[in-house]
Image 1: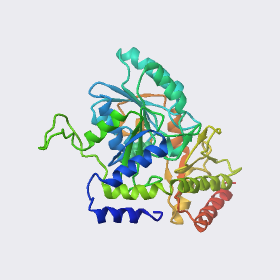
Image 2: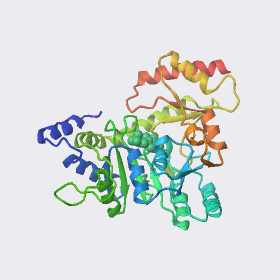
Image 3: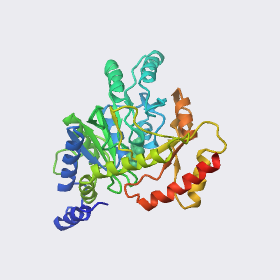
Image 4: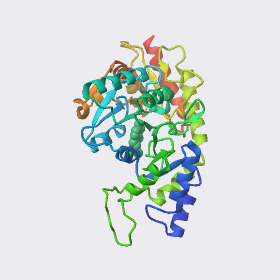
Amino acid sequence: MAGNEQKYVASAFETNWIAPLGPLVDKFESVLADYTGAGHCAALSSGTAAIHLALEILGVGINDEVIVQSFTFCGSINPVLYQKASPILVDSDPVTWNMDPNLLREVIEDRIKATGRKPKAVIPVHLYGMPARIDEIMQVCAEYEIPVIEDAAEALGSTFKGKKLGSFGDFGILSFNGNKIITTSGGGALLSSNEEWVAKARFLSTQARDKAIHYQHSELGYNYRLSNVLAGIGVGQMEILDKFVSLRRSNNQFYSDLFKGSGITVHQESSADFFSNHWLTAILFPADSVLLNKEILMDALLEENIESRPLWKPMHLQPLYSESKMYGGQVSEDLFERGLCLPSGSNLTDSDRDRIADVVSKVLRNAQ
Ligand SMILES: *Cc1c(COP(=O)(O)O)cnc(C)c1O
């Protein structure tokens, strides 16, 4: 937390707005819409709920296909199953680690050939805050007139060619889960330039209640709205988001200096078009090294009570999605094999960094 969150939460108590609506929900939405430049925003109970509502609003249902980046967290894809639709999984490109736009084109062509219908939506992800090649992805989807749900859950504050992520897709989604760059403990948002869609999302997220004094329902709704108390945390967090981005980016710079010349590569932007919030800093180990691999560093860090974690396990390797159609797979499998996420919190101190550097130096020395 940064400072003002408790003040906003207290104001929710003082005004007795303890409900999934209220002035702080409205405020949080307008701050997010302005910050991202997306135009409109619905504050929701999670990022997963935001993807679910986007699919619902796009009319995705039984027998529809939705193309999803395989290298991601399950929140990107589970809503496709909620809708009884079929996920079609796509591999990443080795530079951004996100959806490969050239492969995406092939996949769309192949699905049209196989089913006679276009996929109903495409879900690219900006993993670890790194922008996907979103302009190319948007271009391909525009050619085929397929809507894009841009999963920016990990990428609030990142930009592509100076434009904030979450504002490119027909829909953008954000997450404020406890592990994200800013948090409301749990929460999410749906972004869009389409005001009607966002109004529809608010309607569906509050049980689709018709305009009537009695409780009347013509459509199936959900209980997905964000609490006014939690929105207060969000409003406070947004005041320091840019500072958190620069702290996370300084972590990335620290690791980049630490691993210089070691054979380990730090995941970074490939050109000035890409600006990552570096939510988590991830590294890649050299292929087939017995002395320098992710298990050795993970174990050495753990011995000093320092947590590190493997990269997301690709969806096509998950038991739940093993039957789903997958295009490619080598890139994400290789990333999962060789990658590791390092301590990346906005609150990492100099002495934390020293402790990490000590372990890394020891491991690198042993590997020589
Ligand atoms: C966290 C996350 C989500 C889901 O957000 P929740 O708020 O946890 O439901 C979706 N996609 C990605 C890539 C995420 O990291």
